[in-house]
Image (cartoon, helix red, strand yellow):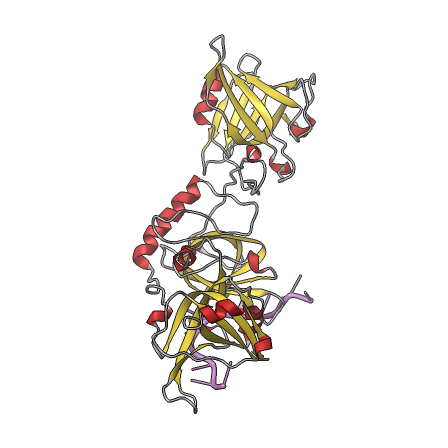
Length: 440
DNA sequence: CCTTAGGGTTCG
């Protein structure tokens, strides 16, 4: 059998394998079987540098995964050992994530089988034994598995070839993957249906906007967007036409990654997915979008501090929750601080002492810095669930100047009105957020 | 169940 080293480039039609070859499942390999007319196929998840054996023979080793049997619990890779000229050629053209096909391979049973999910055999491939190797791009397969915890030795990944659609190429009724810069968003809120809802408007270098309605019963499954300018990657979002415009909506397998959109910031995806793909190619995309966004997205000015508030305005406040209290059915009180002092006298919402949650001593210590924010209607339920001490960003707080009958001077009131216009809402920030660190 | 929202400030 002649040696064939075949690279099928993207876009070219696939060259069929010789018809006499039959596919053998990676799980079914056994030593001693006649594999002359069989081939195996897998995705390259790991490869080692080309080396030379003691006798000068080139040697190249890679690990294959069966794309039909990928799961986080089952590590079913099989080692492929390639010798001679074929090793040298493979080392040049094979990349992580590509589909590797070998015909005319030799199955060698491993002396000691450890029951850790590893394959009981390895494969040997060389020109001398009549092997043929085909390499092609991997079609879209699911999954990659950076183990989020535990044994790092088993950390490996499979590169699926996801295709990302620019926002100006979206078509009604399709399910696509896409990247976008957040131009507007509503932090997740409790919808009138059964799920949390987050509305996100994206834009990309095609300058087309896409508003997405994202729903999920699990708050954590919605994108963790903290500010305009964040960059998101959506997988499997459904595109529909609504009022003459394309609209995105969550479909069954929706998943998202969110990144800080600041040029030069660390590229750390925010996601609830334990399993996701993220490779060099994605890094590059994020960096390019950051640079584009820097000159094409107007990020709302520097974050407002309590020390800088004006009587009649809407603003976003990054703060820490130090107290909360039930007020009535349609409003709820949050006591927060951001380390700065509001220059105006602030409104104190009267509540019964028994309804106030929070460290009394701390509340007293911080009494000149803490402000009362009254939240209404749809925000009440979310506000009730917030934990004392957590870091929040409250979007579109309204400041109002008022004076009570028993006061000589006017005070300033902080309201988070009902509804979600202009992204009005409450988001919880992780302690790792740069704005939270600044707060501390 | 197969919706919810479909960006564009409350009016307490």
